Amino acid sequence: MISKPAFLQGIFPIEGSGVDKPVLLHPDLTYTVPPGVTAQPLYFRGGNGTDELVTVLLARDGAPMRYFPIGARASTHVALAVVEDLEDGSVLEVHLAAREGLTGTIVIDLGLVEV
Image 1 (cartoon, helix red, strand yellow):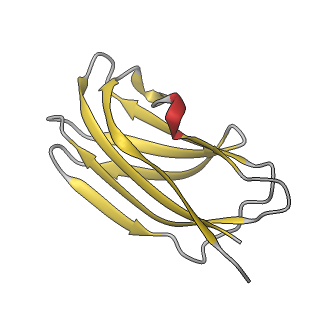
Image 2 (image 1 turned 90 degrees about the vertical axis):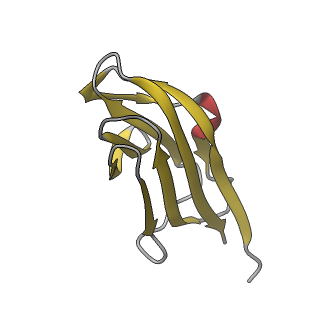
């Protein structure tokens, strides 16, 4: 079996829309599983450069899949290997929930493997 890594990553400016209103963090943080492939999330790492808690939400096909709270000026690393499969055609997006008006920077590194 041949596998191929895929990554959603970068450093992004943020502006909060409300803790109960997650929004797409950046268009580059969208991944569609290619036809005939199954993808598996392997890990999530995130860093929050603001002075307040933010929450990163992984959404699959528009529905919440996983929540990752990241404390003020803190980071998180969560292993996701063997948690679940994403079938071909599934769309994974990285959303952000933060206090309305909160601005700052966030680091995102989501690793996946296509099999």
